[in-house]
Image 1 (cartoon, one colour):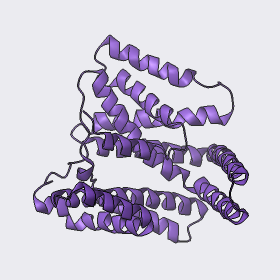
Image 2 (image 1 turned 120 degrees about the vertical axis):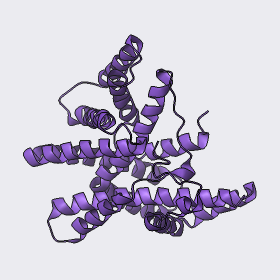
Image 3 (image 1 turned 60 degrees about the vertical axis):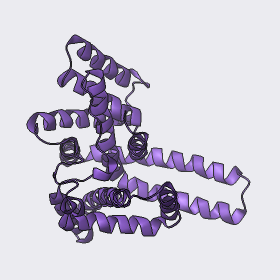
Length: 310
């Protein structure tokens, strides 16, 4: 049985998606059933039904919301199928990275050819973020809180809305990874060949992706224009989040290898929540350092480079 903890982590990661998480799972899954391991007519029919549900839901109109909610799912699913066919020996995570890269390049190319596409996406996302911030501010102001607290929360909400408008591509890319993992697992269940997700403590990815972080950071820092800065910043943020998860996986492995008790696990979890800025920074440092140290591989417990990718 799939670990509830692993499902919880996948669901939490999927929750950062700026588009509907349901569509982000259903559309790639439907495409997978049609193109991969369809298990005959039943798999094909199931895939078509899922796609009909995804595209039949909501009100079809010329409003960019309907198209934007589904366009990324199509690009992501198509990219994953392409990566699976071309990278048959690669693990799930590597193929998911390939899918995100294909979809991202497609969006960037569309933006270069038709700048109004990116402008429309930004406008759509701004409207969604502003609507959510208005709802939150209304709740804060009507709640039974002190005026000083309400004012501070309002400022924080507005500040986060401004940030989210700039980093939503990174959030969408991050949410796409668990969406594909869930879709791949459901594909196995539906076709009778389920694959258990790897333990969280085994999570790792190609060490060469450190160059994506370095190049993204350079694009963000150098005076190359607003577009380059935004692309670089989102790429760097995407990798920072992955390194934090990798550092957390190493911490879980280390604590588990030490034979920690339930009480120790509980105390560490509470300390991590209370000191989350320090904890996140430490996890990033550990995850980044593992690129060269390979702590788990040196211990002999996780010698395969692809462990955690499947």
